[in-house]
Length: 251
Image 1 (cartoon, rainbow, N blue to C red):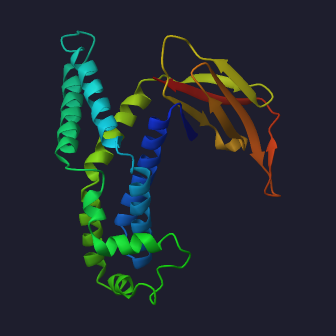
Image 2: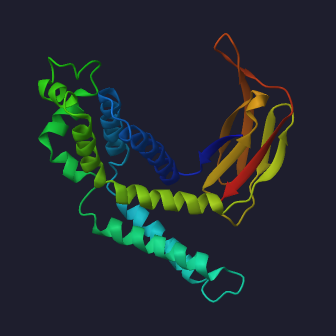
Image 3: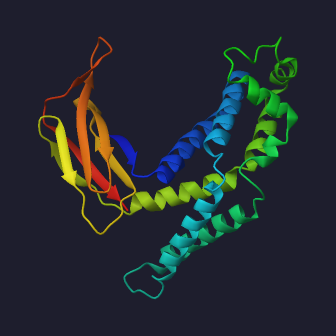
């Protein structure tokens, strides 16, 4: 199954983008090739660009505290597994404390590194990191693999509390919904959303054998999905076949 996710608001959009970038970054960090480390740095700069909002850290802290208060209300409920609840509360507390103790704005320590600043300014220029433009960066790429990996992990370490908080919040959000089996008749689907709940994320699971690609649009009132196909000529065409899929709305 292929899973597609669609955010209902800008905050969740930012969380998903950061989760996507961190996943790529952590994959590249485990590799040792200089080219992988180059793209790890490019990804690190993308994270700093996406996370440049001054209120991002505050949003994550507020969401962690809101989830903690919600979970605390379940204490003593016989229908709730105490061990699971306490483990989740401990995770929320750990993420909250770590992010609170992370001083300043996201990545401000990296912004004070003149070498990284010069590299970051050149990455927006096609071919701007050539050896004749940045000999110091070229020399760094020739260092021992483990030395480069150690440097990268040091630079990333200040961002880990943010990632852990966002990863936990998105996990809780995803778990809040239950999948329902749907069929897009003629490749088209529209559903009025239940009122009284504020949905934040739409999740759609689809059998890849169907060859269908969902184009999703949604707001607080309605969700619309149109399925298309990617043909050999490189163009997208409407998919007129009835298309089954699983739909999950997460609040």
